[in-house]
Amino acid sequence: AQSVAQPEDQVNVAEGNPLTVKCTYSVSGNPYLFWYVQYPNRGLQFLLKYITGDNLVKGSYGFEAEFNKSQTSFHLKKPSALVSDSALYFCAVRSAYSGAGSYQLTFGKGTKLSVIP
Amino acid sequence: DTGVSQNPRHKITKRGQNVTFRCDPISEHNRLYWYRQTLGQGPEFLTYFQNEAQLEKSRLLSDRFSAERPKGSFSTLEIQRTEQGDSAMYLCASSQHESSTDTQYFGPGTRLTVL
Image (cartoon, rainbow over all chains, first blue to last red; front, top):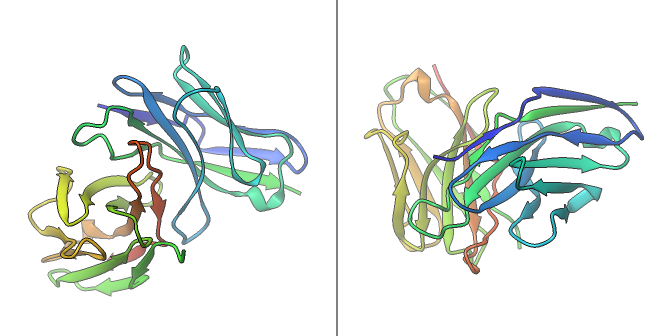
């Protein structure tokens, strides 16, 4: 079974400061890892993904994420937060194995990011 | 590319009624997924299609739930004899199979309220 933990329900950061949203995962074999953002009453918007290769992945809107295999983590980061980054962020995982059932994503419970002006 | 669309955006129904939701995926995407999201939780997988074939169903998908994708394009999710516990946001996503690393793109969701 695969699982994702987002240990912080809420993260508060001042505008202009760096931000980190934490994610750890558990999956059989190699992981494919994703970050999505959700604004109120909206669907999920894809930010970035890790498949293989460089452990630092760059995505949309200046976000990046660092894959750490030994710590089974995939933390989302941004060097300078904007008020417009305030939203709900979800980490998701699926197995790299392309057998039946492996395409479903397993999500964490989400982390609410508040950027304070 | 107009993105994944879902209709209706909101649905209020009385317990025991049947409801049907529609999802139109991104054109040329051959995989389509349904998820359910309740308040304070992340989305939970329900089922997915590759073209018209339903390849995986979660045990969350009780006998009251049925999904179809008859021509490999749009999909419908029907809930029969709705219960208050069915109240949730129902999300649809689509992806294009490419070396098994396909990214799922989500629609805006259908919010169901069962009274």
